[in-house]
Image (cartoon, rainbow, N blue to C red; front, side, top):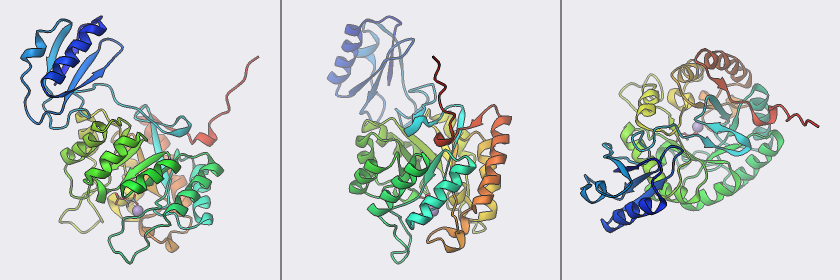
Length: 352
Ligand code: PEP
Ligand code: MN
């Protein structure tokens, strides 16, 4: 339920609404806006009787949120959320972000060389897993803490903000110390204690769609993070499992406009895991931007044939550079642009 206050409602009137909501056994979430304040009600798992609230002074309208997720819905907040990463990178605004880098951090040489290559081509942020959720326990599991330190080094070299995955609560705290955005992978999308933990940490979160998750499941998982107090969530479509084995996953481009209608959170797309096939990554990356995604996350490796994970879906650096050229044109065609890599931003002109 959302209680919309009259323009100019007093602080006492807003407080009376909050008090009444608490007395009803729920939690009020005051949301001051430029035009008017609203007070959201959370904690209900079904319809709420609004009779005690509609009659309160200063209340203009009571709206019932029809979806099972509340705070992530467009009904709750009409304008798109912009999630700010380090160095002024904004996700959800007119600029399309490109997060690029290897699947896993493998060595200093590998991650710094990948970071330099994607930065030179104009990427906005660097990706790379230090904690890797692998289907087999015998596959490379990532460098762990050392991987995070190498990512920090790569950031120092290039200025690119870091996006990297956390697999558990302790890992999330460690990732939050080193990275600019905590990735929650497809396999962890329904790890609710992890979602609550990243909700408490308050750092930007990249929440990937589970491989068998519906869009409602994805939005409910995002709701866990917002309900724990963190509104800085970026959603990510990365393909779902289907009957067809022609590609690794079925990349669900429908999810982009559907989510944008249902939620105010930004949504990016991952054509690398969405297809699993290097030669399909570029066309689907182009399609995702054309479909209105707020960004893409794409795997790029300096030497994909030697990669310790996901080499067969990783772009060569020169393929990535070509992709960037195409993305600039496509973004321009839909009145957007590609967010500049922070290290390449023009220095501020000092007047005096
Ligand atoms: C990854 O980004 O390398 C990854 C493991 O992705 P997903 O969780 O989407 O499978
Ligand atoms: Mn990968």
